[in-house]
Length: 146
Image (cartoon, rainbow, N blue to C red; front, side, top):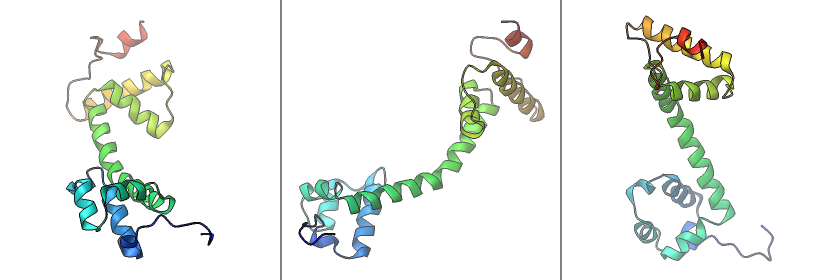
């Protein structure tokens, strides 16, 4: 940092350990169950200082990296839940699965039919009834007849 530029870092966050802990709390969607006032008290600073600190580039970057890491950890659970929904017949979930993994683009009819076929095969393999499209169509023939 240039010497003529004042640091926005509060003295309570002078150590790397304290910066990391602050960023960890602020990166959590629920701030680990703490209110901003409780966080301010924990770090011996005002609520206004908390809001100023999260705008500091160094702290903001730490928070961003911790949030990204958290998403990285949780994403497999989201993927599993979405695949489970797709296999159960949720067509929108199937579209989202294919968008994420295969670059599926909406409106590509052949891919939509392929997705539907995969859903039917997965349901059959698990001994489940075939999925039903929300508008009542039940099979590929009805999809292709449009």
